[in-house]
Length: 154
Length: 342
Image (cartoon, rainbow over all chains, first blue to last red; front, side):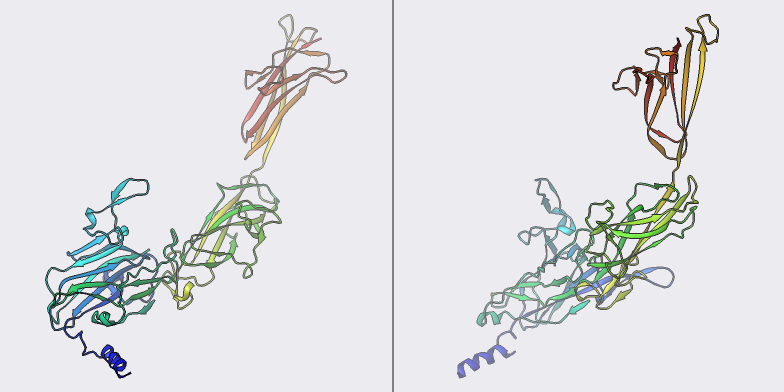
């Protein structure tokens, strides 16, 4: 019995194990809206999503942080596209995308789609099934960063 | 609507002792409409996974929290006239059918209130709305006694996203409407949940528990149709000319009389199944092969062409018959034939 309790204590204890090296990954989503400003111009703002309807532009933000005491290398983040969202773009140069359910990743411009009738066409943003970021540099202890991509509600 | 946005740190060392935490793809299967977009109430769930190599050279993974968004209901509707053009009618006409199509262009199932307006500018009369009828059997055609009469607030049509329904408006035409007069009517369909300025919303009123948001249509739509009075009339004239055997114009035995029958359609629209028949006068005999329509010869036999000569039978005189078919307003048809005076 004591052994089981100790086991549970180990599970609950923040001191056990993961202080050494751990990556925290946080997913959040914002709505991108174009709002008018004084002088008849418009500006693009990111809002907390209160009301979301088809056609709205979303910005997905992934924040990572090395909460451990050792660096982590070969850091790869994979984000499957939620089904109701059509991928639009990312400004992260290290990002690659997949249009085959995550089997292969490359730049969107180099990917092809084989239609059911056998014809092959260039992949379009809405064909994207996964977005992946492969960071070359190790993430030092305590370091953090942000990844993002845009999508539109189908 | 924001459902949850929270930090979740899942350490994979746990996986060494706890059952393996699998980094799962966050594909939520949302029923998806074709044009209207993601169905209201669907959840957009986004989860990312990370893999890395720790300082000890071990492969590790981490999974983010899931950011959930609920898709709200967009209220949009489109109404179009389903008639190819103005609807031909007559003064004092009743149950004159105007057809409209109402389409839910939003992303949630929605009920619509229907209303007809006839006091519109730019026309000569106001049709009187007798009833609004829903195309219950879905055949696109008004079926009296089969399709259901619409009662506002009682059987407001409920349309799924992208679904549409044919709506018939039955009208009476004033007896004072003159030939060529137009009378317009407008059918409006308004979302029962909310209408107003695009972007206006009603919390919690959307399908699936989200908000209801007025779309670009304002949550309502309308289309205009028109009746046009098309009264066509036909008039006939008959003239004759005579050539006698001596080169004169006297009616003597052997004189040839040429009859010219002119049918003229006036007004607007057209008349269908127009036919001309004329008896051969007593004491004359039809000259075989002299029947013409618009100067083109017609055979006497019953055949493919429009004309026929029916020989006399007993006391019944012979006659010519020419089928003119459909004749539009302001057109004329000229038939000629010749007889010899006995």
